Image (cartoon, rainbow, N blue to C red; front, side, top):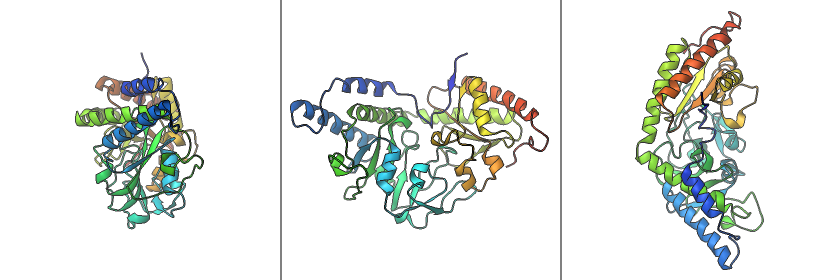
Length: 356
């Protein structure tokens, strides 16, 4: 039986539209900073992609700075600004902030000082979606773009982060979107590309793929594709609850991404679950892809007040278009069998079911 990819929050499969745009861009030879015809052709490709991305992400009239990914965009947005954030933020944002904004047990953050705060729109591990306060300094929208009907222009924030590979573009390219009139201090200095905000020859091929993927993702939202994904997600949760008595589907009933299931099974480590399901033919993760392989409990779940034993048992299943009802029922059956075997090997004190 073929393998099933259920780790879309880590990286979405490359869209055919992005692949085609990248192949076409490979035939455009030159450096975008050169003034000759070849250089101008590359510059035109990049500026066309910038306009496409702005339209797809609802950032018309804003400035878009292309980067190597959302991690670099976070550094560009947050470095040296004295921002604060909650413990559920991605490491790429938290690394630049004071992590002292409270978060409740449901993963919700109440931002008292938006002008000096960073807040993600959607969490990659739990899928929980935040209400953005007006005047927010920085918003990490990497998981929300392409899955939720969101536009930078009506999000009420000064800056937002985006990543191509989260919405079906290539890895290694991202963007900082900022309200026109704002400025940021370049973290990579050199030739002054990207309006002096990010030096280095632009990745024209990746940028073309990013813009094409964003356009396709915007069309999917209009066509209701992610509403269908949410229906499959709900089927998966019901099947898991039937197969695994006592399991917690974290965030169920809350506003969250349409594709994300966060499972809690105290007594069975998340890393062990990932390995068991990999052997069974399913690609899932124990949390944020950038934190995979670490032996500590999820920082996100710990920030929500979950004890280390429960937080260390988290498993993230993230779906995408094309995942079917039959697919998720197959996963639920395999997961239930693997869980039963794993808990049977544990002592009575470790194998009790999760409680809400």
